[in-house]
Structure formats: C-alpha cells, structure tokens
Length: 203
Image 1 (tube, helix red, strand yellow):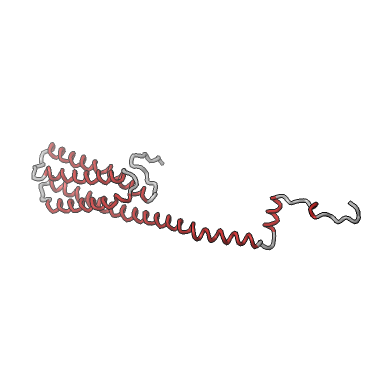
Image 2 (tube, rainbow, N blue to C red):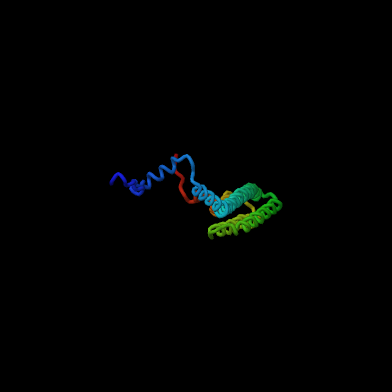
C-alpha cells in the first residue's frame, strides 16, 4: 500500500456472532428494531396465548370445584347412610320397629343415586359410571337384607350369627365401589388419588 492509498473499510476484521451478541447486550441503548420485536411478541402473547391459558385455568377451576363439592356431599351422605344402617340393623335384631328408619335409608339411597347420576357427565372413562352403578346396587342390596329379615325372630345364637353375616356381606359389597367412586372423582380434578387396591409404603 502506497502513501497515497487510503485504508479500505472492508479490510477491518469482522466480529464473530458471539462478539456481536456480547456487544449488543453491553450497549447502553436498545435498538429500535429490538424494542419493536419485543412489543410484537407481547401483543401476540396477549391476544393468542393469554386467552388459551385463561380458558385452561377456568376449566381446571371448574373441575376442582366439582371435586370438592361432590366429594364432600357424597362423603356426608354415605356417613349418614352407614351410621343409620348400623343402628337399624341392630334394632331389627332386637325386634324393634324399624319402618321409620328404613324410610330414611330409602331417602338417602335415592339422594345418593341422584348425585351419582349427576356425576356421570364429568367422567372421561367408564370406570366412574361403573363404580356409581355398582354403589347404587350395593346400597339396594343392603336394604334388601333388612327387608328379607323384617318380622323374623333373631334370637338364637345361630340366627344372630347368620343375620350378622348377611349384614356384613352386604356392607362389604358396598365398600369397593364406594372407594372406586372416590378415586374416580379425584381423577376429574387431577388430584392423582391412590388407587383402591394399591399397597401403601410402610413407615
């Protein structure tokens, strides 16, 4: 290069991509184009992503409210039914009048059945409706034990043992579908409940 030749600007060493990014981040001012891109991305998130996230949040809230309300209602009805059933079964064995108690049990059974029917649209698998149907059948089976023994004398040791066995067997048939229904209700709210036949770890 002679003294009269000016240095060519293109002869300057080019910066690598990493150096360019480092210089951009270290700069005192943000270029206009970068600010514009950020604003566009924010607008896209507001108009497209936010409604979808809100919709998913609302859907999950509805399901959570469904689980809390129905689990609590079903638990209270079943507690009332089981407590009254034990008392009624004892009265029958003692020869007492149980007609009023049986009427209350029938009313509770009808209310539980109606609630189970309302649950059906929320289940996404057949396990929920199946458990609800089996629970209704088990409750009716428990009532049938009372009807079958009404008016009978339950006095001897053998009669008492046979009667108690019937009551216990009918009650046992109610436990499994009830637990299954509780689990399936929990599934609706994505609570990841423990399956009824799973063994819990020891301490």
